[in-house]
Length: 166
Image (tube, rainbow, N blue to C red; front, top):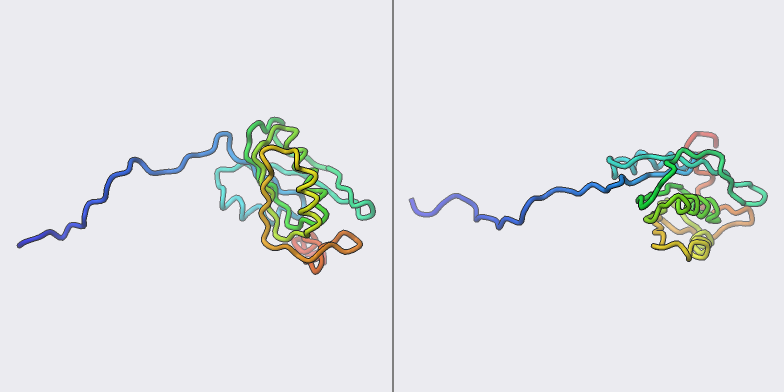
């Protein structure tokens, strides 16, 4: 018999695999609505650690306050993913990112499902001095904010929807 049934040999290019980040990436959902995004992010980054940051927006002043912190004290050079489904005014996200930067985080990605142009603009302005720049990943950008600081047309309160309050 002439010939061979063997497939042509492929050039060898060395070992294959993945390199794990050191220190491990940190996923930080902003409570409570950010918890709805946590499972998906953990599936994407199974080796990541999880920290929690509780922030609440005052409905009259639209200013966010921190009420819970379950994060490592030292985030030096950590890659951090901040989860919050809605980026409306941007106040909570900016405060969360500032909190993380103050602890040493230098590679921050904000992940949202829906954003308002006003929130994006506020983030750009308020975080212009953060180096390297914060990355924003969002699923969609809606029209605008209404007079109450809610995204239009929006989805309503993401935390209420997640926990069946609506």
